[in-house]
Length: 483
Ligand SMILES: Cc1cc2nc3c(=O)[nH]c(=O)nc-3n(C[C@H](O)[C@H](O)[C@H](O)COP(=O)(O)O)c2cc1C
Image 1 (tube, rainbow, N blue to C red):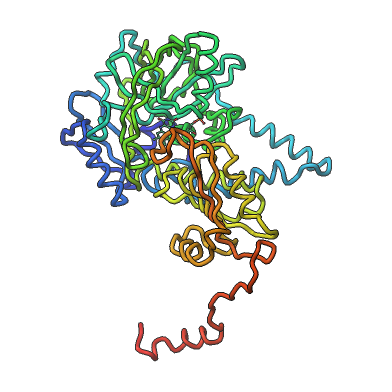
Image 2: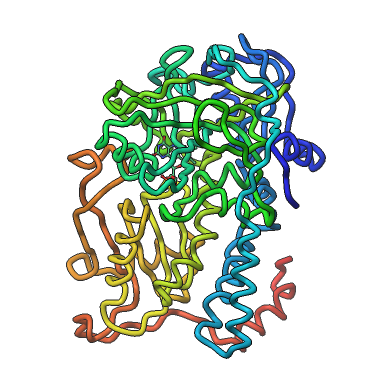
């Protein structure tokens, strides 16, 4: 199912009873957070607040906050289908390469087909039904999420920038702290692609144009969070996910394009010499991330639909809505990781690890030291470099079952032999490391140990009942008086 925009998705959620409308007035300062936090933690629906204090616009929140809604947003029945779809596409591209002429022809056809996911530019766009050249953010129902937040934050923005030299587009989700009606912070972390674009402008002393879209279809919103390599356009990726190109429109006052079906678009610029204190902010980790200096976004034009909905999210102690965006990433990127690490069987980014703090992987081990090789590969792969804890188990272990993983870890490791500690880059949000963005990471090799790995003794067999006894007991279960 392809959604044109957020209202289209809202209608589907309502039809499926996955969204609740709340018509009493609510306060965007803290009250919406408390309601949403309780609802997410109960596994509850998306929330549509029609009456928000001091704003004419309704608020949509917890849109992606369950596996069912996340799957629906990306057009699949369950998140595991995402990986299978990617695998099919990859097999078509890579499985046939190099091959017969027929196979090469198939590959070319497939490449031409992929071009159909490229975004298309349209002239008249719903997101420009209203154009305000004297904009004021005060009319938007922007949340203050947590009591000690530095202010109000736009939390679900799609930030569009362009590489100064190549013109390559980037779209990333980076929060914006509202300073006043016309200025916000721009919280792209130093490792992110938006920050790379900014550094180039800084080096040249050039003013940087930025557009921030709020809304769009759900796959496009997800794409802004996906850890794609810089050369891959998030809007192409969104087109691939929704199996239909994203419609884009040229901004009114900056040389950038944004999704035509966004609810709001903030156009403006960043002065490369200006920075301002940003934060603190109640973050994904469940702690306040510390205040720091970040670039400042100046709003010059605000465009919107005639009747826009303001999409937002609250992050905090997991599980929160962002966890499900993370789970989609886990499923989508597993087949891609398997291209580089063919021994990888499965991967789990537990919700408590908030995307980057913990990765559990199972591997088909076939040589000594392979678990260590996998750890180092993970620490060298894009945004996986932040992983503070990598746990490696054997291929037969179900990494989605945390109890099984812990059982293997607690019992299979020798502390001196099986723990690997390395230093390297960490996520900006990490508050435990001695330095910002740099510190130690731990790898735990909980695979069965081989003599080639220094094991001087026999590795014991696991307990397992004989199949004939299992069958006998199953057959006689009721005879024992159990139901
Ligand atoms: C709700 C939400 C808020 C986020 N806020 C930020 C943020 O403020 N700064 C940041 O650098 N990354 C943030 N992220 C993570 C980035 O969106 C993610 O790393 C993305 O891949 C960055 O895009 P890029 O690779 O094009 O830089 C957020 C993710 C989510 C789901």
